[in-house]
Image (tube, rainbow, N blue to C red; front, side, top):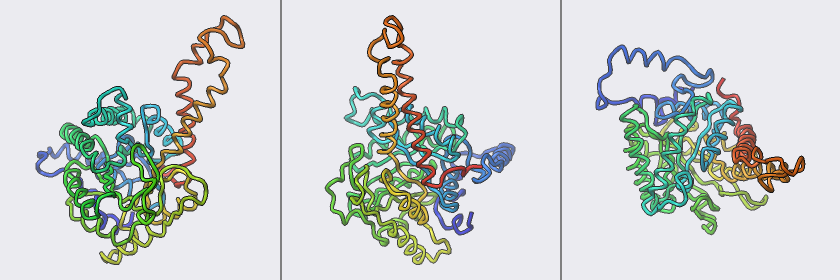
Length: 402
């Protein structure tokens, strides 16, 4: 890893080191922890990155390794344990990290759609429940897993407040937050307000080792309650001056770590060719602008993320990775893949799924092993995992652990 990255980017290993307020540890414990930290779990990653949920300095080490080595991590929206497990299964197969991403609506679905959610109580409870599931099983898959939340607009901040409270409680018990990172999407607000609110939250996040992802410009299309289908096209393209303003402001937060979702024509969903005009050159221009402003030797001082990745060409994806994109969001394609697996299962066993008893083999033969929900759901998991392996190939995220 370049020294320039380690010294200039926010969120270095020292940035999340616990302060004196968390108590003085015994020298024996410190020595044991130091030995553990220097034992590499993955040959191609820093020693801080271990199998399981990755947070704090280990997360920034992982993202910087991705930027330095030229790959991006799939960031996948999930809606329950089936899609969560499909993500981690895929990561184990392609040999790389994965980002499991909860939306506000996804969290509500995990808790149960019948529940009241007027104060975001179901969204908060469901997202926390999903995160705890990941913490329990992630290490078994043998890969680094980033626990992230997706678009949170201004009106939804109470959802993040509830999740932050859970992370603070988890940090007090374990020394690590429950969540790795949160995205605040305040792109509908004026730039100064957007970054001002993000800065306030980053002050809180930094105390427990949570990274913030923020958005500049607007990602078009519609996703999980965020509808930008009619937005003015000029807002789909972020300017380098805006990126630098955000970088400068957020860099002032001690111990803060951040990634930037800068819009370069991104659109949620999948559309016919020619309907989306991606301009990833914006990311290159922004990196150059920041580099010149801060006088850095690092030609990629900002960690970028790519929203609206479903349906994008491999050329656009890999060109964006060259500009410092460390994560690409995937939702529409994986939703289809899960459904397509279920659809194919039903088509294959259609005649065995028309009643509890009776199929082409015999009128009195039971069909329980075919309509057991685990069978069709497993088919969905397998199809989704296969699609994610293809995504990892596009993102050059294959065999990046060992």
